[in-house]
Image (tube, rainbow, N blue to C red; front, side, top):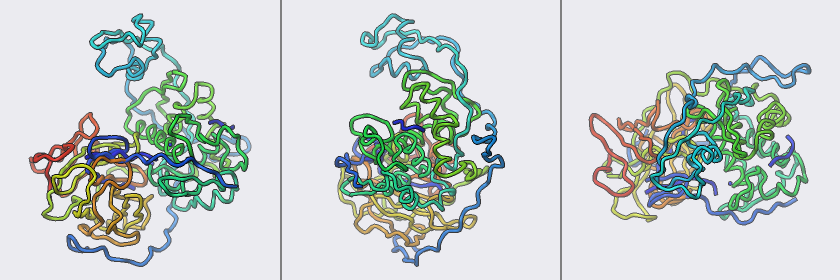
Length: 532
């Protein structure tokens, strides 16, 4: 059972811990338990401590949150230096750039484009070295992969702090709807059908923000830079279908465009966080070494624009005259909002339990895989309810709370719980501290927002609701201060003592406890059974 959670995704002038449990879900297509990709929207239109099994305890609305203190960067823009930017970060230990040719044997499913991307060269360079046309490649053929000519490092200009890239504590005091209305641009009067709901422009921005855990101010700055939708009442006609500039069939409309942007911002952000990339490949096939002294927020913007621009336009977009200037015009100096560090040294996961009731036998159906979209970290695990049926079937089993804390949101198959721990009491916000996302929770009997849950309290039934999924299950993932927390890295999932481990293959993985191992299996199998 797998699920793939994706959205149902130009150039103008100028990601709290969430847990999502799915039987086996991904935010893309998959096997019997795949998290659903939202259905294509209708053509958009613009108009001018309880016991296990106990019920949730209703509570009064949470009090207004106190503004979270932020660290203000001393250097601010001045008349003399309007493009102030913090000093670069200490150099990251990036993967070494290959300096010698290598031999590669063509495998089934390879294309020359894929091989070129894997080895940071161009198709033309492989062709010139081997005198083999892309269409003439055959399985088993040996190719010499040349070294891409050395080039200067990419720009080191820091565009935004990390906390302005993800849905962090710094966004607590930002009201998306009020800001968009005050600009009175095209976006303020826009509406679009998304999954049988007619949403306003501000509702779409908020939804994408919450789904991908990407900062709404960054999404608005990207949208304004690419199309002028935020401030202009009558933007250029050519921006109306693809306002972010990703012009591909199936990605028309604001929801799809912003979802694509958020997914690719996450891609750059977490690649940088994990030191997994050393070059950017631009839309014109230019390959640029990444500056080792940028930060993850800047890497997010640089990476997203590689998908859209050739070298000249990309260098403009990531310079002081690009997205940075647009953000500054809309919201002020970005680094004045920096919350640092987002992930404190020595961070530990709070105590969590498995998301099933005592005595129920579930299946562990998905090891570490993307939490949302195609490019977030492998932060999610999947679990399928008791029974032998496969596919999307009704289940009366219960997904239960993994810890104490209030429910922040419950919609579109999602339940977001703010985790209540002594060192960071729950504040009812999903941008701060630890948060768990439970995905594919059926509307029937689902807990309501505002309810306070104790570990073991019932949340709802596993289902196929929300995202693209091929079978009934639940998908769980964690966030801390807006960052998705990987299930297969330094801070693995630990539930009732079961520790998550991944492999180099998405969805593969296992849980280990006291010498016992449960291997993820996409379906029903004795070796994947787990219970409390």
